[in-house]
Length: 78
Image (cartoon, rainbow, N blue to C red; front, side):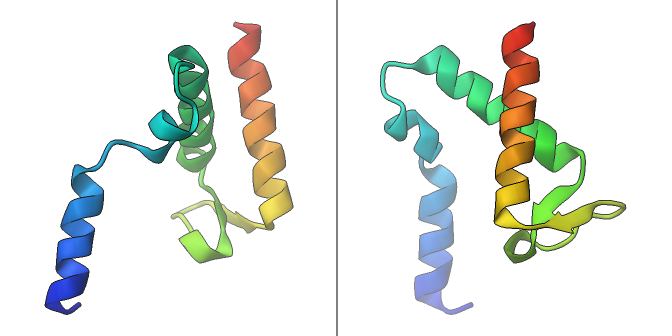
């Protein structure tokens, strides 16, 4: 990675999560969505662009969305 790419990587790492900007004034909802995404990723579910997780599976974008919605429903039921 060149110098420019390195600077972009550091800038991205220092930035707040994009969901915080996309869901302004909805902190609890943003927290729930982030938890759902983290849950899906922790279960090893990935789209091809993210690469496979050890012991996980690669799914289509639609299946990833379905898995996130499923996780959201579980979190909201609590």
